[in-house]
Image 1 (tube, rainbow, N blue to C red):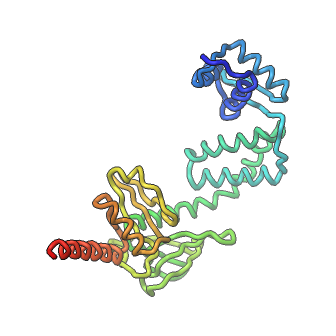
Image 2: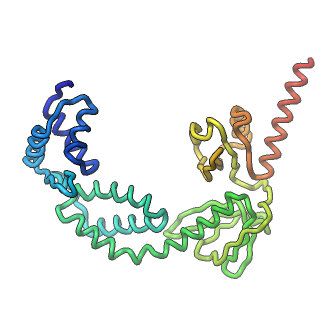
Length: 297
């Protein structure tokens, strides 16, 4: 075991408790991981040092936790209000699994505020719960549109009093409103539709039409690339499957993108739109013919 200056060990203890509540054994294990020899009596002395510094250290359910620290954020009532709205929105949009991680992050912020911050925050959570319930409607619409989009289906929607066939969907947020940016398969043009105006969403048995106007190239990566691929600017993962990942690219020049994807060989396959699949196939055929001609000459 190595000896480390006591000031470092006190600050390490502070850092560990700031991250999460810990039992005495977990605290000792944390020091042992850095090859630092420490015992329970020494930990108790460090608790006293932290308390003299102004930290309030408590114990709950067998674990020690920081109740407050000697430096603080000056949060107003409005700050607590909007943090509560943020948590409620996250719960509605993403569910409890994401919300638990968010709660852990917000608790670190609340630790840096005044001593009754958690009580203030809990009151705001109840107060703002009714505000965020309307987001469930957006969540369900977005999830349904994305699901059909992943399946490359042509989607029929009732928008106000119009029935429209759409594809190539993306979402935009502006002036507190949510919009779907879609390709209208009937007029062959793009439209910006408010999510509030979409009354019904139906999937059809037809695949979406291949369009030269389609902004997204969707490709699948398999094998080692499934987990090791680094996203380029303008790319996002749209679906994870057991054997491959689907990625959309709406930024890169098509020719540059195709040349880059060629490097991945048979681990890469362009999925949509139909026009991009055909262009990529022709590029492969031209390369094959050029190579054949060079070999023969």
